[in-house]
Length: 280
Ligand SMILES: [Zn+2]
Image (tube, rainbow, N blue to C red; front, side, top):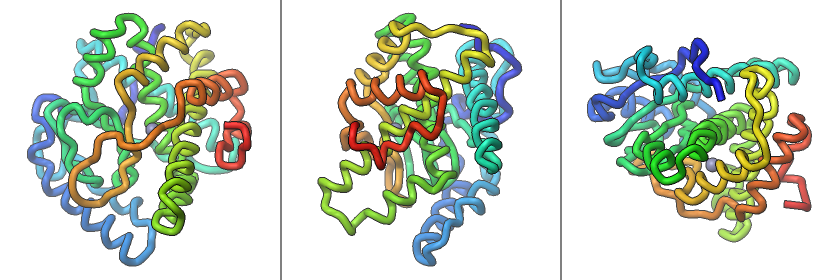
């Protein structure tokens, strides 16, 4: 797999400083999200205009040229930008790039504080994918080569949640919260997760051509097994307090594999409506 292209401009490197000084940015983000909740408006656009590094000198834009791990992440993110740019164009929409924040010791987000080992997650409040690099170390150490594509898959899955946010799909879940039973709500959560897996598969389908690599069935199975073995994100919704570790099911491994493969084989976004599918 060759990922080391130019790389994305949207990686924020917070590895050296943790998130300890981002109080200003995080604080304003939380206030705006809360205001959004009170007035029932989507103010996330406002949040994304706040500079990520407000109040801190610790977060650098981009990654050092000699940093293989950072370059890998940046290359994968760039390929998601290329793929989703085109997908949104085809829908007559404009894709808004998410930021990807690398961290190690913990980080403050518009969704609350994340401690180390929380795993990767997406925060809709600030349109950022957060990757805890100790999670990546674990993937690599425990799963060797399989960890490589697993790392790429994790980014593509989180970017899938960003796409759901932009398309208003995650909103459906917000609206259902508190209005349906917990069992119903969990079912919707699973559908959201499986669709993020489908979107990751769709990305892999199109990225293969862009980046000139070839995935076989074994790669995919290994990667998904590796990612599942360690855990996954939880879509972060709370506007205050701490980012919660994963607490609901993402669907069975077989379901996740099914939807990833469906995206991978078809590359067709119309095939990914997990919400109206009887066959999960
Ligand atoms: Zn997820």
